[in-house]
Length: 315
Image (cartoon, rainbow, N blue to C red; front, top):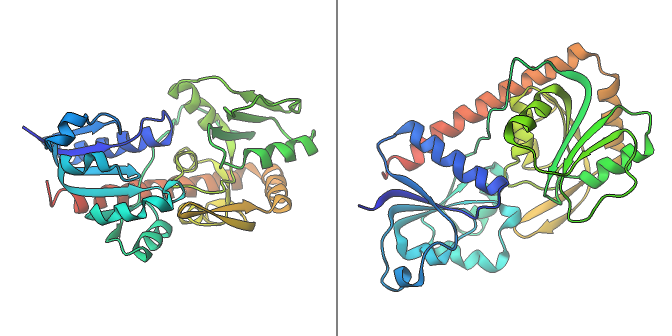
């Protein structure tokens, strides 16, 4: 018996792995009777492709389109990350029945290319732990393994300001960082989800000046824990947070990145946002954090409603 739905995704141990897991979890929670499986992008064998072995009624391609799976399903859906989608792959959209966009920004991009596209949104893990008390003077930046999270901009400001509070930097760059300021705690080794959750809940101010995002799990997880967020005022980041629940930093320049755009924050404005966070009363930080948490709950609710709409009519 073939699967009802097959999720095809690269396992990168970061955002993409999380995307496929969250989508499968949402689908299972809505209808546990359907058979939903995941596959790595290299798992379809040449023999299966040659004989066009059917694996599922629907295939969902995460981030990019994977031609080796075209014969594996009757219907194909793409959930893209525009900043990771190469222009040389645009022709592959002809084989996609429906593009489901994580953001209005992505929706506009893929509709402009002639694709049939609808807004899905997305979600992230709810990392909130009410048993952990926040330190509103603590700063967290979760750069992960990405070069697009604005980590260099943050470090340059902490080097300039040795008087600033301790910054916890969770970041695994390809090169070793040298001569870090004394007020930066660098974690560059693997930490498990529970340990990360403790940092996310205990440290009150989260720095998220991303240059580009397909979705932005680190940003949305910061919303889920009710942090005071400092974020880039550019799409799609400003679709998730705005001045009602975060400190927004304008950008000074932009440049194309595949089908998306990199937005570079104004360093002086980022500096002022951090200074504002340092001086802000804890009560106001908590109020903005509460608004961010409420926005996360609404994002998650809307995503689950649209999953039901776009998937289960065909399952």
